[in-house]
Length: 232
Length: 232
DNA sequence: TGATTTATTATTGTATGCAATTTGTGCTAT
DNA sequence: ATAGCACAAATTGCATACAATAATAAATCA
Image (cartoon, rainbow over all chains, first blue to last red; front, side, top):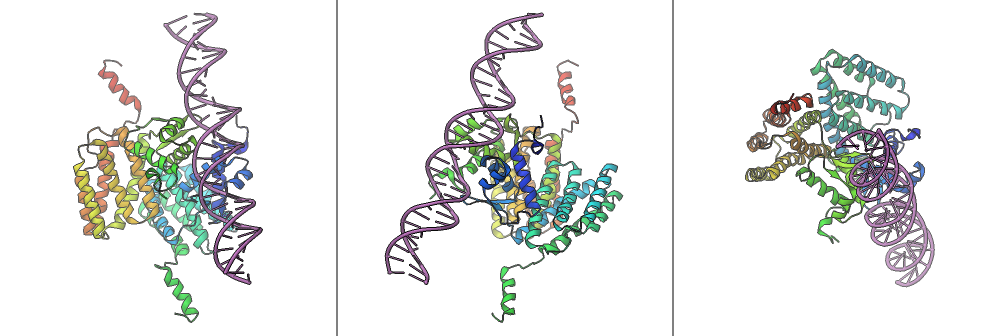
């Protein structure tokens, strides 16, 4: 068994799913990209059937949009969805922090430290940097051993990269590495209140940095351009 | 357009999905039930392809377990998953309460009141009662207008009925109607702290009532039966 | 020329077919 | 009888075929 190296961990549809997911999160497939079943299947060496299955899964995760009769495309969440998403993320990641605070094993601490190290090293590459930053959060979630919590945090972190891709400032280090390190310290110390505050602040600053354009109405932004042009 | 009444709201696969989901949540298909693609497709008048698609979606929602090469079955979450699930639910529903507290419109209040009324009336039918109790929570989530929050609460509420089906006491009114009414009162009053406390307590008591059998091991429950039979 | 309509092509929606795997049954041997 | 084995039936995994819909190009008319 284990013939093909690429077939690890289940059916081939899952492989397609993982590949696409990775491509989307790495922003190799930017939001809005069309995802034709044929081309993908050809490229991946599987039939449309399996691609379709993967696309359905991705749509359930909110990473792709499935327009009936018009094909799939990488999702383009709205700004409002973005803000809501981070709100939800906060609620869940607070639970992560509460669960983990003071309960980290030596191994877990090592894993997290190593990860932060890697984040630090990869600060040059924008794409990798974003992915690692996200993985820090999913890593934390993983350690709670709470399966629903893990699944949702994973999904939200994945979708966050869409938000960042769409609305994030190009060159802001989206997730300050130092904030991750501080958070880890508080988690180790078991200072739950402080850790929660840090996590909240951390996600808040991502939201602010990226999703900030808090135009309650798109007209606000338009009127700004209008005045700049001497109109209105 | 809108030829078939049963085809409302999208492709036929979605119809299959909805039908199965409803059947599972109503416990017409108890946890563990086998879900053969053929039979379902025949019964629903669609091909295996569409059934498959629906099953994939359901598995993503945690309602169905997809064993490779062995077919799909209604999920049988473990007790631990159950407890974790309610923990996650709490985190999310706290956000629901915080969002809604003091912000309910007249219409929303009416809708919720009517729903509680319905819950009260249906207290006789066990199955309906459970479904309505769940729908109260999804209704609340809906009113936040936060799409990710809505999706997750929906999923968790759905899965909760699996937990209840598996581990819940047969005749306990799983969700005391009075608790719903109290919660609504606090939400209207805008007493966020009190409302949050109520929601927490509410979910806590569900957990306690249902998921309590904190048997760390299945042997405990077996040994009980053994002694009752004069064995062991 | 430019808008509108018609043909053509590409892509999705769904069913079906076949190989592979699992499950169930009956037979054989101990 | 029962454990083990061989064979048959059922079921899943996957690809392909064909119909239906949308996108695109060509052609027609004002």
